[in-house]
Length: 206
Image 1 (cartoon, rainbow, N blue to C red):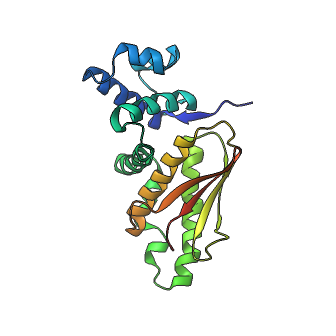
Image 2 (image 1 turned 30 degrees about the vertical axis):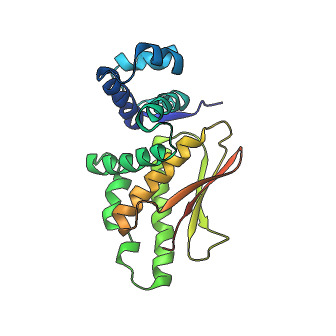
């Protein structure tokens, strides 16, 4: 069975942030040893391959330590991290899906029904970015059964994947929405339905 992994484009950012806090004296060697695994610490001296795959649990452990130091453990840290990742990837122009955000189909629609239908097509394309960066979970966009004017992203096959990663995904989707539809940054939120099934919900209509 394939181990859950995250692409180097995201992993390199969390390692760079870790190194920065260590250099500034905000994270001590003792904190590294008590919060991280030896293999996590070893990444600090490596050149991270942007196209490579890295253990998603290593990513989570490092990001969790950053969360403790930078925000006192607040869940909002994960959301903001995902939001920043969306903006950074858009600026870098690495993924063609991110470049597409500036010219989405929904952005050209005025009629509410047409916007709603166009949004689904946009989302299905944008979901492919997660296949480019995460090798786990079945991600699908469906109409929200509780709100007929909204969609939700259903993610199955994620038992054992920590919640923080999906809060970050909500932040990333909100960053995508911020660019393509000028929506507020809290446009998506996370909910774990059961250990193997999580949902990202829109906080407002299309």
